[in-house]
Length: 176
Ligand code: S3P
Image (cartoon, rainbow, N blue to C red; front, side, top):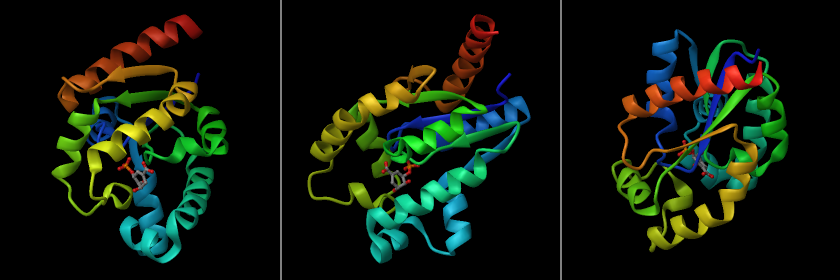
């Protein structure tokens, strides 16, 4: 039986907030791919984007996932663009049930506005259009990678965590 839970989804869908609650609830380790990258490089995500561009960041992300994927009993909050490289999903799926969190573009904008300066890809003049376009482009990647999909737009992080626990039980009873 897989004993990790990987949370994927676009920026602002609550992967970090939900992941922390979920890990505490299930007594699992909490790991965030972005934090692993930041700790390893000694740089913040925006600094990495400035110095090495998105391509450089994606290479660091692939390396981080390679190291994390062998972990046991962990909740792994994945960076929003990790799904773009299928090798990451292949590696995570070996021991993780993959949960895709979604949110509407407007809810996403509202949530990310509270954390200004942290997401270089949304540091643009017309963020709502960028969010809409990026979600549209990435939707098939998220859906192809996931075992479970949850719309978080109207839910608190606690409610999302509860829903994940319920859906994972259901998933396990169907897949044992
Ligand atoms: C990214 C999402 C970010 C971070 C980086 C790129 C993306 O993580 O990995 O800024 O491409 O969607 P969060 O989804 O945790 O914000």
